Image 1 (cartoon, rainbow, N blue to C red):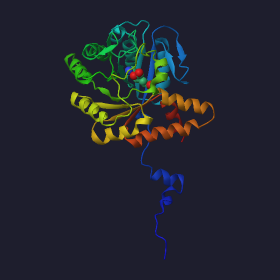
Image 2 (image 1 turned 90 degrees about the vertical axis):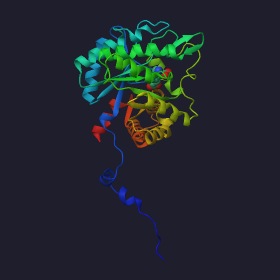
Image 3 (image 1 turned 60 degrees about the horizontal axis):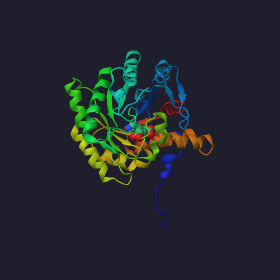
Image 4 (image 1 turned 120 degrees about the vertical axis):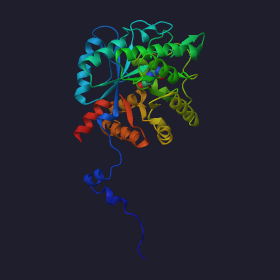
Length: 325
Ligand code: PBG
């Protein structure tokens, strides 16, 4: 009797055959590139834990944006590092805050590039928490007011998308109402709906200089052990008017990306965070992995898991490598 089995290898027989049956693809349009704008002059400083990622001052922004545009990146995510910090993060919602200035500059000189403004207070507060602090407590409702002010000032500066990341309850509802009242009904909210209290943010806290000065973020960011809680977070953000849902971090949470993709009908964004980037860079620098194939495999894995968009520090390299292929 003849053996009965399937010949899966038929569809893997050559590069052309594999390309013909490939299910997922990476495109330049998939990527959102994070940028750290440093208040000051003549600063272009590489983040030591994130080789290839730079904090730049406004006078270096033009060159940086030209490079971004030349790569074919269509969207940037802006973080500001202000010269001064205070208890209430006043520079986050200042008309001439560093992010507001950067947004105006980019929209004036690179109007075709979408500007996503990260809306949070931790880079702007002296204590490094994402909201208003009383004693050791991060207050929820009091923080919402400041976040709304921040979102409106970013929209006034010209931001195309508001991305609130502070994980206070009700932030989407509050920001939606605030934006609408200020006349910004057309500006979408990309909510960090499912954001875990993660060790993978370590290098970012160096890049954005926003590490909490006491305690941690576990009373507002999610417990990495939880899955059902992600449904609750996403559900309420959808109900409050979110237009995109972010899952963050990326690699260790691909199951959550798939859950969110299957259960909600909004575009899903994955944040391939700083620690994920640093691990790949460190291993590649040691010659332990091949950077190009590792990065492209990770990123296409995120698409396969259900991400429509990927926020990643690898964006420039990835686009270059995709063109080479
Ligand atoms: C601010 C914020 C953080 C990141 C993005 N926005 C840090 C944090 O929550 O502590 C992390 C991004 C990264 O690690 O790449 N709320």
